[in-house]
Image (cartoon, rainbow, N blue to C red; front, top):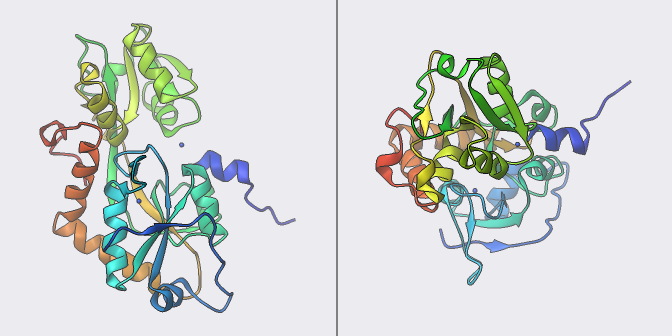
Length: 281
């Protein structure tokens, strides 16, 4: 019996030239036309955009213009074909489904989980994002062992990679799951927990919005890092993903992607000096 990935499963596996334009729906390409051929012919690169998600996406309510690190990456990739960027509004979970159903060509900022890999392909990582934590005043953990103690209270958002890391590397601590990251932040501010396990980009953005929560602590021994990739169509013609991989390798090498990520974090008030030098952008 063949098992197909479900919408619930894909969403659970989930946790952006001149300014392009927005479309609500997109026509599927024919089965004989690859992504490379379609982008080359139409001069349009369709991407998923997720409102209110710095550093990757931020929408100006007044003008409708999009900004953020994923937007700048998309413009750079589109420029290879002298193409424009087409914005398709989505969510993090649905962006995987949008790639699978050919509504978009690229979904940005995805961890290549096995569940997602059942449905779509992935580029090489554009960043490798380490995990760490926010902590109460007077508590400055440096390693996972500093958290992995019976008297340490740790928060995480349920069903996330933050929960996976907390349970794996701090099983001796008092672990409490909350529905959202904002709920974890409130618990930390109220003194109900001592630390919140959170990925670097999200943690830095949280500190940018509320400096009193800082600093963000990268944790080592071990260093826990997960790659972030772009989601793409899995198809016989591999030219599109090969071009995008070449763009990633080149722009990581010359520091463009790091600059784009830092500029995206600044949309949430994160100063460049707040970004740890060891952060692998």
